[in-house]
Length: 127
Image (cartoon, rainbow, N blue to C red; front, top):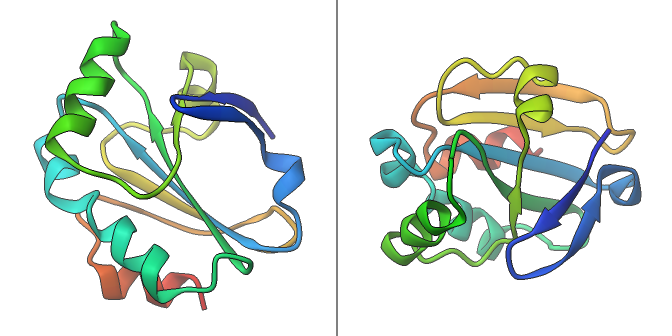
């Protein structure tokens, strides 16, 4: 459970997303693999029904907001970007980037993966 501010929009509470699958893509702005794989979220957003799957990129492991903004300048995203916390990093036990969690309609973790994940891999996990 979390309530996180969005970089360019309203605060997002995980509880409000019940009833749909959720992709949480945890990234760090200094992570090269994150640069290579985060654009796959745009494809998943285009290919999946927005009412059944919510997709979020969650920035972690940064000292200044400018590093997140610079990351997004390099990587145009069509999904909301949330600003994570150290507490969130610890509660999701994230030890490497990118880390992806898939939550089911009840809000429970259905699966996770670490490292590069292709568009097809992300799509498959949302079925």
